[in-house]
Amino acid sequence: MEKNCEQFYGIIYLVLIALTVLTVLFAQMDFVRSLTILFALSIALVKSSLIALYYMRLRTEKPLIYLIVLIGIVTVSILAIGIFPDIAIGL
Image 1 (cartoon, one colour):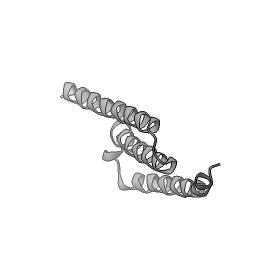
Image 2 (tube, helix red, strand yellow):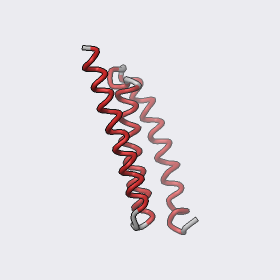
Image 3 (cartoon, rainbow, N blue to C red):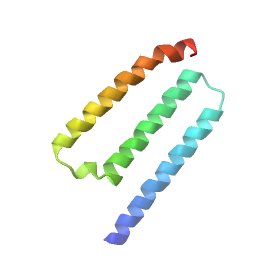
């Protein structure tokens, strides 16, 4: 059982590396800046979800922890939306 768990963590690790490489490759392409930022943020969300669910073992926690995580996600979303006007004007 322990070997399966190590293999599973290894797979998650490889997925995280692949997503990081994908982010870097996408950033080097000539796309609209806002599209590149949106893509990078989307991949960062997936990567942080994988880390939180599997490495921090949040998927086995009680429902209260999800409320705490949701408050953090809402706060970060509000802050991210707050910088979109600056991105649009090129600051």
